[in-house]
Length: 460
Ligand code: NAD
Image 1 (cartoon, rainbow, N blue to C red):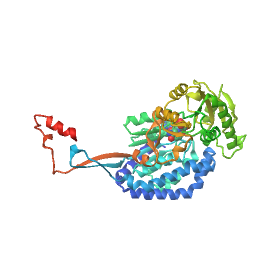
Image 2 (cartoon, rainbow, N blue to C red):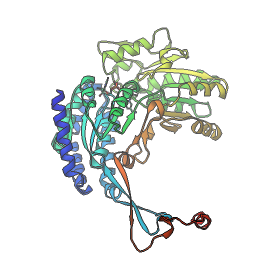
Image 3 (spheres, helix red, strand yellow):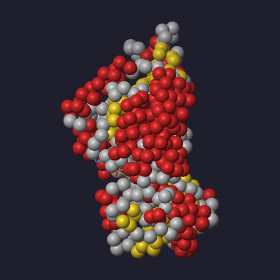
Image 4 (cartoon, protein in one colour):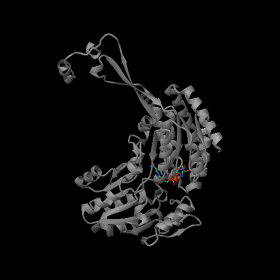
């Protein structure tokens, strides 16, 4: 899309917003209901698109994409009237008498740039929040999931006028052109590297921005939990969508004396899930494109592969792979893996373990498998991360009552349910006064002595 067309689109959304910014929330609820209806009609096509783009098994595309979107709509339909209502807050005695309240106001035109790994729900879930809060949206989905982009265009185009919601297809160049416009809010999901480009572009106009980025999510195992069940949950979280999940366990960090047993359990669980040759499993996905396949292949160079490693660049098959103790300098440890390679590191002392977690700081997710309360608390209190799960993986993402987002390198700003509504609304504080009382001392000429005033104010 040419930059003049992008400018026109932005302009038309700006005009639409100015005209409709005070539209009552119940109108938006009607649109969300319509969206839900169209989704139900198009469910099969959504699964097909996700299969074509990522070879996602229908079970995965339903549970980790489609259902998430439906749940988000349901939550907004149920709660939007309450979330959007003005909120009374108690007034300050300094201003007595007054009525103090907060108004939730949409920002205006929102630009959303989304990734390819969960291309349906990572576009739709934030979009639902933005639209429900009263914003307009231009969505640029990932060029790497073109079939999903098509179905997004079809669904959103059926429900919303294009001045309200538009999908613009294209790659980094189009994203850059979009970023040259002045938006009222930018919501970006993708890599940390591109996140920095987006943040710089947003800074140019002082546009508020949410960055949903990646990182190295650890899986700490102290050996006090049942190892087979522990392995089953880690394997599920790691190899879902072929490891291309932003909150997938990136690496295991296990107490040395349990490493061997856990490794055996991990291999057993991989085979329980996908058989001895995952290539033939209908439940195992593929790598998104050759570039990412090559990156994963390069990550395996000079590594001690103790399970898997089979791959085929033609079909983008990359089997579940387990690597023993890569060095801290290797790309497997330095960079986010974002694929089906699971390194197993070990630790002897708590200090060793904490040194690794400190080096690979600010992950998007943090997983600890333990029954030891002190151990769990020490970890979840001492380390910053986007979100944590104790004794499981990924599942915090599914609770719309919890905010989802990163910290530091893994991003800033969080969404889902009410958190999306708050993120996408500017909170306008308003203080309303009457004229029947005034503290005369506030006006000049001021009292000569402050002591009486100080005495009163101290008690307020
Ligand atoms: P990416 O950063 O390559 O692309 C994401 C989006 O940015 C795409 O729409 C792409 O077209 C656009 N883009 C790419 N280069 C650009 C540039 N130079 N300027 C402007 N826009 C550009 O990310 P990806 O490969 O699609 O996704 C993988 C990464 O995203 C991983 O790091 C993963 O952890 C992260 N991720 C995070 C979350 C989250 O919720 N925090 C979710 C999914 C993925």
